[in-house]
Length: 288
Image (cartoon, rainbow, N blue to C red):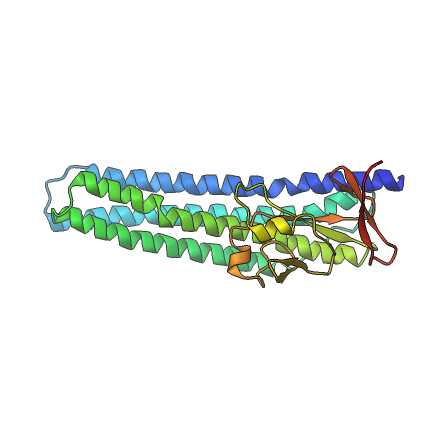
């Protein structure tokens, strides 16, 4: 294959694969919202159901129903987020393999230790459990106020909606978005390290997210190019990839940036990336 054609196909495949992670994150977050809404409906149904039993028994029944609703949420949310992490992990590997395949270069499908993936999945499961428990404690307080008559049903319903639509939802969304993205970045980086030992002069390029209000440091890092085994410099920190666990929380949580592989001749918008034979020269050649 002609070198220019090979580089063009490589760049196209790299850009195409970078679009997969946002879809995985979007689908997972949508499932989280869906499961929270199911829990909310179950709890509101329990609140509004009429009963002639004593206040003490009614409180016990409502607590049981709320606990069951949140346990159902915990299980469904843990399942969807760990599945999302697996999909992101696989997509991270493919984001390196696919461009080389498109360019006609086989890097033999990297075999990566999945220990980091399993750690991420455990973290997600534990954090979802913590979030559910905190919500349960808040909801139990709201139930007591309603049962003893200090809070009317309408106010209790509003409080339940506020509890489930507030901090628990925000925490769950942040944890899922960040950790799924981190799983992708880790497997991508491990794959890139293996590719770099097979193919000469492999580099990587930082791309900012499409968020409306991205962090200034991440915008400044946009289009930064580094050798595959070198760190990016983002906000004064050395990050091997977006959401690098060695980075600060301020620089990694909710980060939506990407890292994509580049080789000599890769497209750079309307320009072309040129890498010197020793890998020490990186420049962008504007089109004539």
